[in-house]
Length: 202
Ligand SMILES: Cc1cc2nc3c(=O)[nH]c(=O)nc-3n(C[C@H](O)[C@H](O)[C@H](O)COP(=O)(O)OP(=O)(O)OC[C@H]3O[C@@H](n4cnc5c(N)ncnc54)[C@H](O)[C@@H]3O)c2cc1C
Picture 1 (cartoon, rainbow, N blue to C red):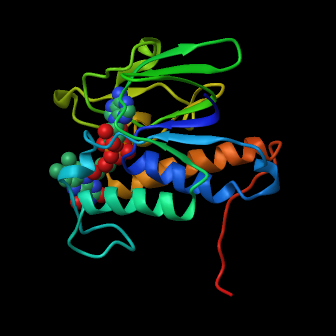
Picture 2 (picture 1 turned 60 degrees about the horizontal axis):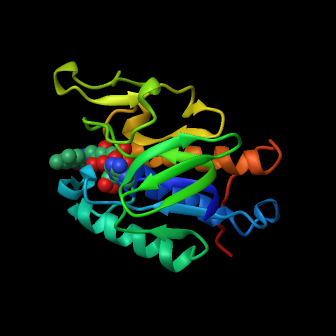
């Protein structure tokens, strides 16, 4: 099964990226684009978080609720985004003009990949060892990791978002990072002309 963009990880950064990419799929420059998310959530740091300090989120909201409502929002508003559940990515290979992503159940190919699997160690996806470095914005004693990147780009067509991109662990930062990557991809699909997706009050 071939994707144009495949997001790996269904936490704060991955889901935010999927929502913004999904919202852009109705644009003419996205015609025929196939987007997917491997929405593994079990290991999300949000699972045990209580989010009181994020704009627009009601005080006392649990991270678990955000994970669940985020998935429902994606399914309801952007059903074109294919959601792959209950699969964990084990391996990534670099083919000539695409990536091969293998989970515990299937293999997929995609022209672009967004990695949003969090900064926890051990990092369990084979094939990315060359890009793994210690996390630059967390306590060294915690031994967190990140992927080398320049403004979220690891190498052409391979993006990283959230804490795995080297951002501090804060919900709003992870969401913003995922959304930023989505607009970079939309801009790429729009032949390099800067773009974003804004809904407006009518
Ligand atoms: C106890 C706790 C309390 C917190 N409280 C706050 C707070 O009050 N305010 C605040 O702003 N932030 C808080 N945070 C931080 C916030 O939860 C994180 O910053 C945020 O979740 C990071 O988002 P992320 O997308 O980088 O990683 P995550 O949300 O951790 O998402 C990573 C995703 O990748 C998936 N994944 C991992 N490996 C694979 C694989 N091999 N294949 C497929 N998928 C994979 C995981 O299952 C997970 O869903 C808290 C965190 C914790 C742990």
